[in-house]
Length: 632
Image 1 (cartoon, helix red, strand yellow):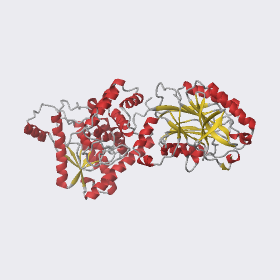
Image 2: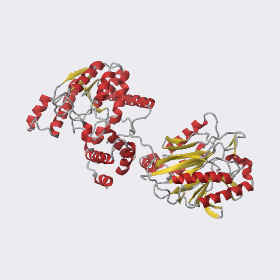
Image 3: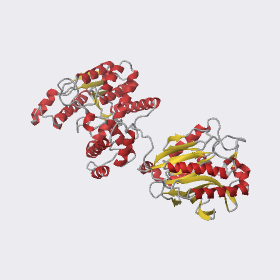
Image 4: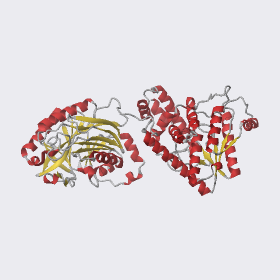
């Protein structure tokens, strides 16, 4: 479903040296996983015998009983489409290998030997096993059937899913096999492990899994032997982790006696799209591998994964505060570089009392504080027009006076009226021309003021407005440095809130944050805003969500809508999301001509629409196939 695959990491209750009992526990978990529409489930290292069987692993009775137990599992899962990965000790050419066996619908698909054998401190695997590092293009006989055997095996459904397998120490090695598996197309990695518990080890283990998922630009599904293993010298806690591209999606509670598993829906389509734009991934040399085709896996009836409705905003308060501080510093130091390079000492900003101009002013003020420049050299100009309300104007005045910047008021109504007369436009004709004349009048004043005093015009438009083209061409679309160009609208208010540590401006900021977003270009009768942006173009929280998934992951419109329905299920209907997504696509395509000539501005996050760097798109690209794909 939309490139999602449900995977599971299982920790079965182990009875050391009793494959029959272990098989029963494994089978029960497989049935549960199949009922939950799991595509692939992985079990711990040496699942059937137990990792701590030690020298008993060299005993023929245990090895044969293990094979008998495997045969039982195959027989009992003949009608189970879930792919199963378990660990066995496998005899091949009179050598014993620590292996993973992959089977589905009662058939063995392949056997993968462990590459790196730990032989230190409490681990002594070389006492029993041989490394499979050189086994490629090979087969082995298992339960009377010849099956692929080697470290060169990948498994594919010929759609989106390609997965590889590591066994415990393989992950801890300097060059994990998953590195090469990723280069050869694997996006999913499964690790059968037996990692004992030591103080703090679980934290490092989780970090290792998480960072390897990021390095491989994939998802890593890890499971480790549980408390049923022998405690002669060590304790195993049964740690299960599922990570996706540097983020731990889910991990279990360790030290649980009962058999259990964790599940996660992994977005493989997204992972593959990430690799398309990563040049270092594309340059990595491939090796020869064998791709084993798997059968049809259980179809997911619905995506069972929480989708963050605000992907640009860190969820935790501490993380959000750190992110805000970092963004403000990026803005401030970018402006410092631009001004010092141009040998300009004055900044000119149009102040409306709205969110964007407030952020631009605060970040500019921060830059001046860092450099100990006179804040009076920040020239803030409010330019009331036909739609300006006293609330926004008063907030603009109060903020500028409190910050100690130079403040000016230049009314644009007379200037705009003369423009109307010059072009033959009626004053009561409230069309796009009526609005754009005002926007361009303001830009003209800012630019000319900057020329007069030797200043730099600071742009206030944010990333969301740039994406939607919600600006007047050569009006508020233009500036000398677009300070907010990398900041999406949903993040703007958190950045402004970050400045509330200055108690003098905190009350002003609170009222600015509570004011409806509006261009204030249409006249009013009772000093209240009548032109609310989000009723015209839709909620910015939706548009930022659309932008994030469209640009970062290259998701198609249907998938974006599907994810939005999960993220905003209590807030917007299917029809509303479709309506605003359609508008987003149309505006994003048709307004590219504004982005093609947008001014310089700092990139602050992973998404930027600068035509000189991150986003290159023809201004006359046709949106038709995207709309058709969404609506059909």
